[in-house]
Length: 368
Image (cartoon, rainbow, N blue to C red; front, side, top):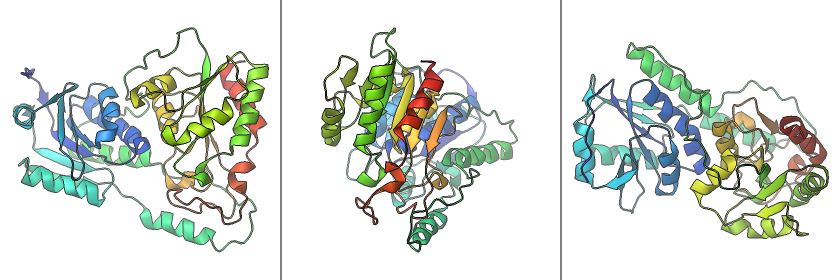
């Protein structure tokens, strides 16, 4: 496939890497879009499982799907191409300065791609930038929580640095060092407008009851209380979304059957799920990718934090999003929420978040 290169002068080609989970890549999409709007040419490097997100980033022309022990895929203008065609196109671009490499995760996986870039693709890089991860800070927060033997509420300051803000600051410094004016786009959605999955006139809220582990999940009983109240007292439809291993949650929450509740668990692809989120009136989710998708689409939401903490920085930034976090002495008890057992055996950090308060938040934002 021959792709004509339109004559345009870019400041630089920037290889930007984010290879991890869906939510992290959705956060990174803001940085990709910011580079585009500041007249840089980003080549986004992500995992094959995140291809659909890369395809949804506004004006993104080039990206690479990279994973250890798997064949690397190259994309130009939304189409997969051969490596030689990809390199020929990238190297033909008119740029004022040499290429940069920005690593938004600074892990073994991303460093592996940097070696691939040098040794296999033979791309010359002038400078390399790495995001500051604050890993020690996060580990200390978890360790300190284990010295508390009660579950009382502690003081919670809302002044914490979001990952999204850290990435914005890094890009701002890079662009200003290039003696260019920084055009801040972090208040603009980086994703293409969502397509209508359901009829346009259908108003619905979208519920994501699952998460990567039990201690990150608002109890299913609380979700059911909320759904029953929405069914009885609003005109909203309720869409339940989730992955294959969350089918039991979908079945539990759609019972008893109602034409106002649609169980979409394991029934939509990632690109379709993003469209469902983008056209929702409201999103209810645990600390998962759906929170960041809602943030990018600027959809009002409630996001639950329990074993993890908003202070880790993986938190949406929109004022439309309500963070529900009780900030107990025992929280955070995990960096990534991978444990499946609450050491107090009661999951108080999530169980005590009141469904009626969440219901009232929905009414406030949806004008029901």
